Length: 66
Image 1 (cartoon, rainbow, N blue to C red):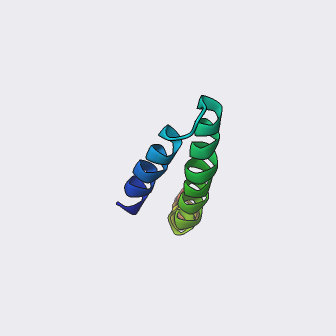
Image 2 (cartoon, one colour; image 1 turned 135 degrees about the vertical axis):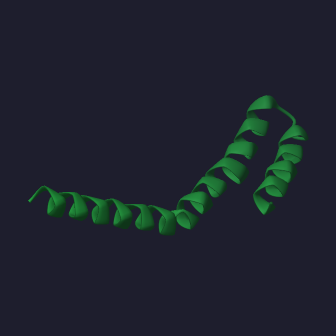
């Protein structure tokens, strides 16, 4: 929810810039880059859990094969 509000605020900031290039740079540097870092960091638990489940599944498959 907070990310959506941040995108809205930065989008309005970008619209008020004097040129299109400045607007795009504002949107990229204040919105896209920070949110991508935030989503990467907050998704680390999910990735770790998925890797662990995959490893558990692989171990069960190897055990069942023998």
